[in-house]
Image (tube, rainbow over all chains, first blue to last red):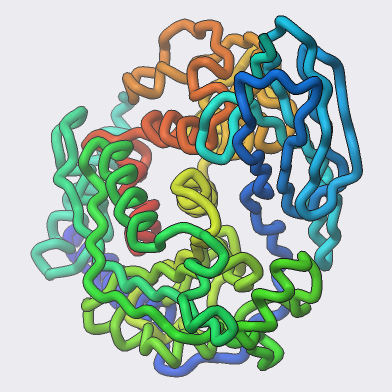
Length: 143
Length: 339
């Protein structure tokens, strides 16, 4: 008797399994999209912060550094000679001072503009780099 | 174990055995039947590579990536495949089984299509890009016969490569029971025979950004895989802890957040925090003590290095517990295995 009950359970489970498999996995037709589902915002990769290679060593008292930042708002360059900043345009060219007998280690910081797309907000963050587009250190030596 | 538990286990085993004799697929993970702690058998996934790289009439009909000095999509794809194989300990092997380089721009959702010279002008001025930006996935599905290729088994997933402002999602899932994959599922593909992912890459950027797109796919799929696990059973929620959200309890973190990050993409943070990130290399034994870490552990701010470091800590051995395989890569690579 006990075995008979279990066999009945198995049969019911198998039938239910086939039913749900057919309806959930392989529908013949596609119904209208379900009502709006609350999805999270897609995660985005960071904007590109790219700095062109610098010239080193150099006798010049200053050097133009060229920076590109996607959706850029503000660019700042800090080094042993101080801080220089400016509004991000395309491309951003900032003239940085160079001290004599000094090795300058540049840190380039870019503020990314905040952008609202529907219910999602992107940007509004800061990117920083100490290397150029080729991955070489942003170092300028002035003898 | 109590007598009741023992009786119940015997009962469920007996039912399982009989169901198998009836030929019923119980949906158990193959991993559940493997010995624990071995290296899983590698898998190969077939990729259709679709590169939107139009010629530009105003630049001697050179391809767009050459005109704007962007990357080579084939080289990027090759490096990405190598990275995934290496960071999955040999498990994940992508094979490009077809390649199409398309001499046009993909159609946007509202029907708009860029003209090559107009796009180059917009790029140089950094303004004038079309809105809405989103691409028309219906058009892509039809043009590249995606459902048929998935159904026949010829292709497991699609990699779209294009320029900035192409309007692709970094990843999106289609097929029966498709779920959020860093984008809303493609509901119109529910009639396909199996789930598939369409990746969206940008040949202006590098392999680090491609790994990030794959990482967001991984985050989405693992969150869904563990959706019914609560508290300590939800190992995904444990894996993603970082110091800012779980003070003193950091583990590996997320794509955007290393263990010590205080904002998105903060992979160059030099602040030292305690983290149990390396315990995941000994999975399933997560009992080790935390150690002090900072950005020197994951590449000092380099996007690719951080993401490689993160992926290497995903569980990647045979075995299973609580209905979830110890090899999380299998779900990320093949979402059909997610129950």
